[in-house]
Image (cartoon, rainbow, N blue to C red):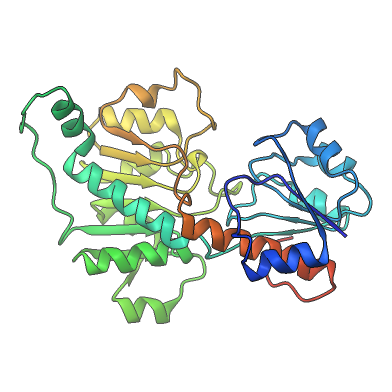
Length: 317
């Protein structure tokens, strides 16, 4: 069997047990390019049984042309919105993800963005680089503030633990709330509207679905009090960009810290780039050595298990 890998951001050491299993049981090939066109992707996987996909978009038109023998598309990440999972299921192709593998890494970045926004660090960094010793903007302490987490899944839980240790009051919302976790860490279960109304800091950790797309819009901003810090390490399209810009101008959003954009890579003229209240990182939440090893470990294991007829608990379609 053959496993084709187009993911360049996650890899395993040569002596890792899962990598050794993969090269022992299959032919493993890695693409030379970071992001393939549809035509290049189809050519690369033409004789593959499994695909470990990276940043490639695998839409319905691509899925229809995938080779007959390809049985699994395994994502070394939590999100799988780059793959048309319905089209894959119609072709009998399993799509898998790697839940929990990057949770701590993304949660740490979310907390870092919270601190940067609260203390306006980019502003002060820029001034000191210019040798301007200006201490002319007060920040905000996070201790004692209310943090609302929309999406209390694996990443949201990691953030909740860190924020609780920092002395924040944490409110959490999830469609499938883990009440035992909330009791253990003192998290207050709350609905979406309560979080929008009460919280000083709001962090987004929902998946991008037709129900959540642009859910943080004008109506949501109207529920918030003035001076909120909004953090997004999930998906850029959760937030309606034009409504966000209005909310910043109106003082509802004091600072927006995001690791994700509406389009990636974003347009050079995206208006968020020119706003002092916005801090942007280049979708680097999972970019740690530790997370990348865990991500590829699970992605390869998913593919190997499916090809060998073993149970796989990470199939999403």
